[in-house]
Length: 278
Image (cartoon, rainbow, N blue to C red):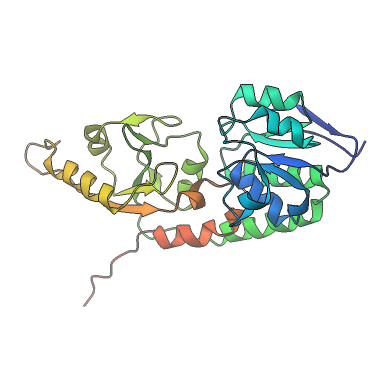
């Protein structure tokens, strides 16, 4: 027995030998495999596995994260498949389980991300590289300075309808790591919001993610106008207009080796205390 460990759903994954034909159905974990030095052993990926650039031209694309081409996976004869509970649905996982040992990650916070990295390292014979990577990621987050001024932030991931992130999500944990108070902390997972509901949450900042919905500066203008023209929540005062920012969604939501870059990016988004002294 080469490796026997539980995945993050508690399912036992058993490998008789070092896997040589790996399929990854999770973009952030595909990038992790690359950074662990396993590019030559990856045989299948999704069309969303865009890092590193050009990878989709070199590997077999087996579909997306929500819909796969089953025949392609069968043809590739994988000996390890990597999935994620949120990215891939139960039907996909069940199909993959019948083809090869299938590791499913389930990640809502930094600790679970580091656990997944260790698991992937163990499954692929890259334990030491995984340990070094995790050490560097953890060091980066430990050096992340907390903001001088605490801000309440609302993070939007979708439009029509607008959707935000509540507790129990990896993005929420990244916001907490950076010292932001999630304006939607009383909500769970990915609730829909009307503009009026956003105003009631009174965020200081609204982050508009670059993915999965590609928010742009045009969306900022549209939202700002909606805040300005919406009925005031206070009969005496106008609505407070938050600071709107389009942010890099990958650095908030990718839980693999991209986490090396996340702390520095989060630091740039933190509000700074204004010196009013003369």
